[in-house]
Image (cartoon, rainbow, N blue to C red; front, top):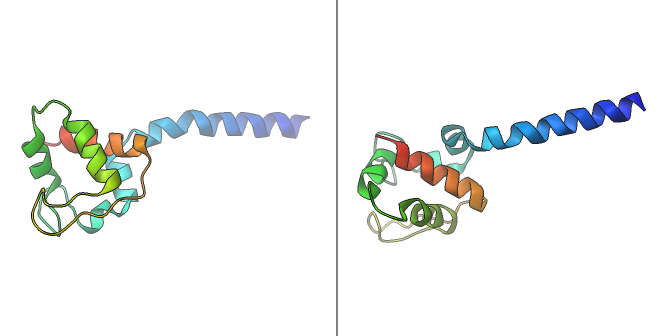
Length: 104
């Protein structure tokens, strides 16, 4: 009985902590393939994330549009090289988009 209770407590603790980890956009960025083509400050294959934030600053619906591009890929927004779809959930795409848009 004691082992079952401890296992349930450990599982509950892990579930409580998971949303906090997912909310950290920078950690999520580093854990996904995003950094292969993007950096925060400098253009690599794709634009610097601060450039993306500046382009979408103040635009209504920018987070949703950017989240869609992150999840589904995009082409033509930043030149001829397409951005492939990324292996992220809708929530992760939203978290990444909000984090990118917060960069100054």
